[in-house]
Length: 153
Image (tube, rainbow, N blue to C red; front, top):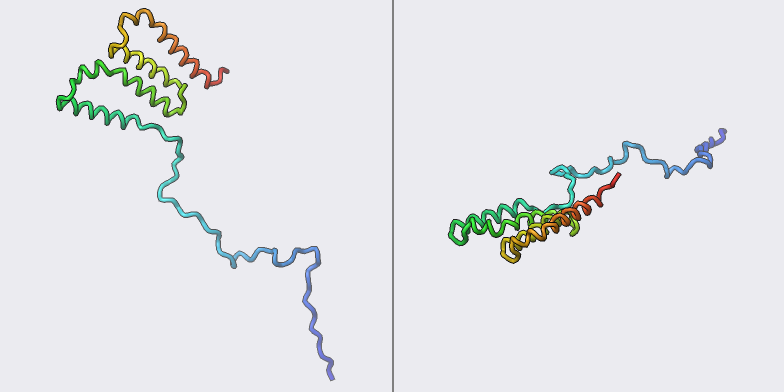
């Protein structure tokens, strides 16, 4: 009679090997990692938004010419009286875009406001002969404020 054959036990890895569950599955058994959807428009780096001064100026200029055509205002008189609003608007836009009150844009705002007092008759042109050094002081202060932001060396 033949003795029953014994089935050998499977070989086990030594205890120093990590358990089989920690091995990653074979590459053909798992799906590729999900990919981000492709955007319709390429990504554009966005800075901080700036005030749309050109659009506002075109709207105001169109309204001014429309009012002049309809006889509501006399264009030459209007421009002679209100021209200082242009440097005020430019300086205000500079201050809004930099988001600081004490920016170099304060110089055109102050100079435009100063000239607006003369064109509206609040100050007389004869006074300008005495107070013109204020303009030099304002320009110098503006230069110092602007220089403070840049390194000196």
